Image (tube, rainbow, N blue to C red):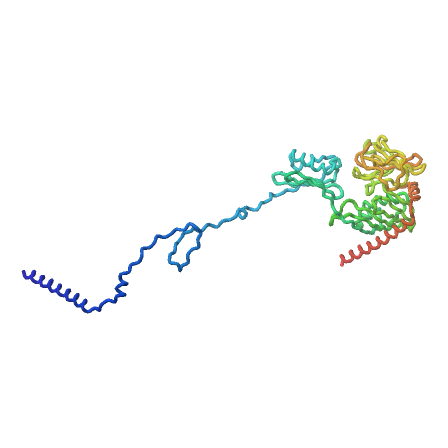
Length: 457
């Protein structure tokens, strides 16, 4: 009972206190200004829904009220096809090369290089359009460049005088002729004869093949077995076609001077390709001589020998000059063509009469110029045929004979051709050529001496 009376008293007192505080708070505050009262009544307008743009519009700046955020994924780094393609790598190439052997055909050489039959046929056809394959001979070089799986890329045939025939594989097999562009260089040298001309030239580092040229020119004037006592001096001037440091073809003599027993024998070869040379003794014209085959090798001399075909000992009635098939053959002295045709083992022959008692015979020819006719007048150095192997011959060569009153004589010692050529000589022009040759020889020898001295220092 007492507890209920106490709780009721407390509740009445609390209510009275709250009422008093509220009345005092209201009565103590000042009235609210009208502007503030009006501001308390403002409410914001409802927000408009965002607009989604479908065009590439410029993004609003940060100062704008409405900012639309758009997520665009960053593209990955792209690389163009040109950047991704790898550089082409050429397959490794293999080069195979060797010389053609005697009697060997092109197909056999290409087969040895590992080429199949179809490739060999195509190569032979392509090269054959630029070069007569019947002219292949020992010393020609075949070079094959192919991949490691034997696919040919290039085939080259190197023939005489630096000429190359090249067949290149591409979309189509194409062949072309590569001609060198050589420079003509003049050299000079001096040699002392101790045992033989050949040995002297070889020792002096001068082309030893010039011994054949000297034997041809002076064979009818100088007896090299009896007249050479040792200690004689030779001075030579020659020309070489050069492609860089490589010699093209064979060197050619331009001038030779030989001191023998107090006399000076000199020979001047022209630079006109005629092969016609003038021989001088002590500064005077002795005779004019044209080699039958320019630059050829003297392969067999006049006299008894074992025949290369029949094997028995027979008289060799002339001299032989080994040369490539087709090499020009020249008349050795002025005369008149007396015969063109075939004579048994001689094969195709041209004969030239020099006066009433002397005749020269050129045998084993492969061809005769179309314009050459019997009875025609020819000069020393005129072309009268080409080297061949017609008749009884082991290979391409010229058999050259000199007949006096129908009897064979040694072509390297007979003077009658010299007499026939001497009648055609122009001494004034010949002596001028001699002076020019002497001057050039002295100049080149001085240059060679100065160069050698500098190298030694």
